[in-house]
Length: 358
Ligand code: USQ
Image (cartoon, rainbow, N blue to C red; front, top):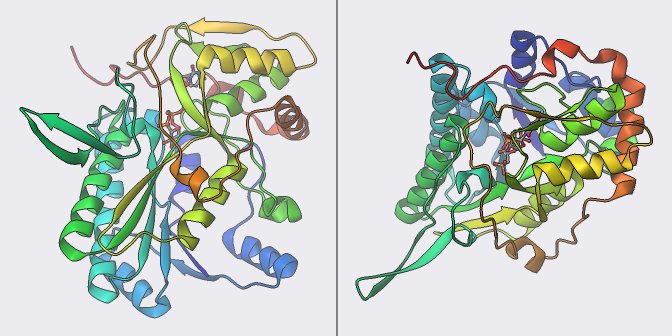
């Protein structure tokens, strides 16, 4: 196994003046810790997917069977800060992914690409969301098309562009790829990271990178109001971090066929933001205030949301559904690290219409 990293995520922390709530070791320390607890080695390559020469050299050197591609700027608010951040996000994500597709096609088209997509590619259409593809009948004729996308940020759009590029590469070069359209992740530990504190993974609380349930848990422990945007009627697919890891394992061990662009909706249940706030408030052993802020994003306040997500379950996924026990264990984790929070970073500052002069 090998890991490739340009440490961009650590750079965003410096830029934004926020850090993971749980301290993160440097890569070499984490690799050493993993070797100690598991007896397995991980090779590491330091470089950028935007550097095509580096990508080709790395793929040629390591010759993987599968590549799990998580190396993208993943925050919707970050992509909406201003023009520069939108351009950075789409350039970094779309071009990095394209370099990887070319490397696979030229070096070994048998490599299975497992790509992190997002449920946000679909947006909130007023029809059922299928797993990536849609059977369409139009003027008496039928075809199977990529599901039409209506995403909600320049970040989510970057993943739509990636999906189209990957489907095209599968069609013309006979590559094999799985697009994991992941929902909003919550939780912080997996059975693997729990083996040693040096293996801890990120737990973001700030309004740019923190995801909604994790933020509400942290706000409850800090005695801060839970920041529900608008009425909280927007519904999202969510997934426990332990299941995200399991889904990747299942996708890698059951590769797509050559020429196949396979899509899984990687989420296990849906909740509205208001429901998530209520669940956190109910579990917390003290008083919790819920604050409805003017929604800084542009999104539908109320909408239909029905998602098909059977592909991963058919491969054997046994979902961990959101439970009081999980949320309670997160309270302890936050309590132990709450001195690390910079309160200024909790409140949303990025407005979807904020950078446009009108
Ligand atoms: N929200 C609040 N209050 C908060 C934070 C968020 O009401 O303090 C609301 C947002 O308005 C949104 C929902 O909660 O309606 C989810 O927001 P989020 O920040 O948890 O998630 P999102 O921006 O959609 O992005 C996250 C990850 C991204 C991933 C995506 C999956 O950062 O990498 O792709 O979840 S999905 O949402 O399915 O597209």
